[in-house]
Image (cartoon, rainbow, N blue to C red; front, top):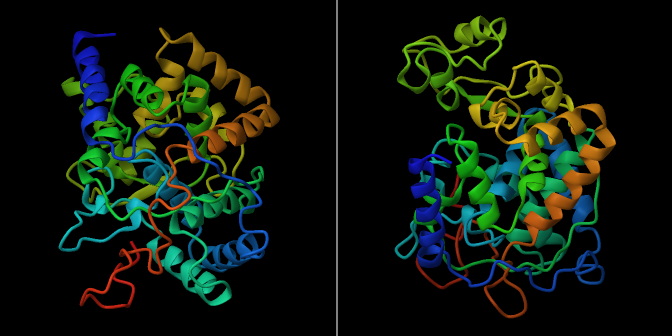
Length: 346
């Protein structure tokens, strides 16, 4: 590990103690049967709304699983990413990793509205994100699993933590490994969860550094396939629109499969944080996992499920902690704010 990376890792661990609220990273008492009597159709309701959204937005499934990931890595899986700015809250939506990037809030709005009709004040927004992630993977052809439920919603957000603990597309592998370890996730979890990039899109801003001036070298990233390079340069020209999006997986962009890993083997990972799992040869663990998941999709699916359950168990609020928000964008209170949903789709 370089001295700069080591300093960054030390900073991450130190800041964890300062900015994370809610104590231990261990999970509370969650159960797949939590809503069996109070809201037995929760999964079917969530699935139906995502199915409808997919008819006009092929990337919504990937966007929803990303919301769950970005929620869990900041103060645990507590729905804090959904909170809007208010007199007392600085929204995590405006943290650098999220600003003009995370999306899918309108679908979460639709899900919450439907669940409030079916079983009022029962299903938390944090649980909506967890169920939506599983249903999104399943609808794209990936595995299904029994989602552990019973999370409650936070009444605070943490924009500072969102700017620190969410892995970025340009960070070194050793730093990303440390960030995952801080959350109780190991290298196997890192590689498996990165496989969620088998569907969805990414903005030019997240990978343009690889195309023209990688690490201030004046040249493209040498670990980028030279045939793939001109394709990406055509999509993201220098001084072009950095909000343009392209497929994370150029092989089967809307299908949840193991093609993400075979793309890495031929140097066609879109983000640097993807390609380094295979091209950073000093970490043979990640290379071996990429090779295994390429050769065995079942192994990838099985490992992905285990890792998603682990991630979903990061510091949930349970019991009487937090609340069940009636509106995912705001805490339950009697302020003069509108009772309408305050966020808009991104």
